[in-house]
Length: 96
Image (cartoon, rainbow, N blue to C red):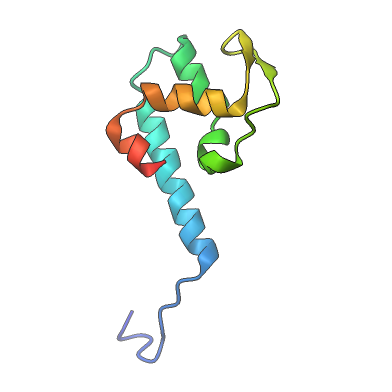
């Protein structure tokens, strides 16, 4: 690349950093869910609620309850992420 474009400058912008972080967390999440049986509640927790694991913990709703079909109970989004982090390994917790 340096030979083809000698005057090019590498620019890293905010959107590419966020995209790279999202891909890394999703790849770690998929590695984690592949350890669970595909019919288990733990597998469905990570598979169905993947968007919650991309949000900051402070941005999760801790008051609004909804019925989560995969868990068969009423939960908040904060509770689902906390439950997932308890099941996760140390590397996923650090990445989150």
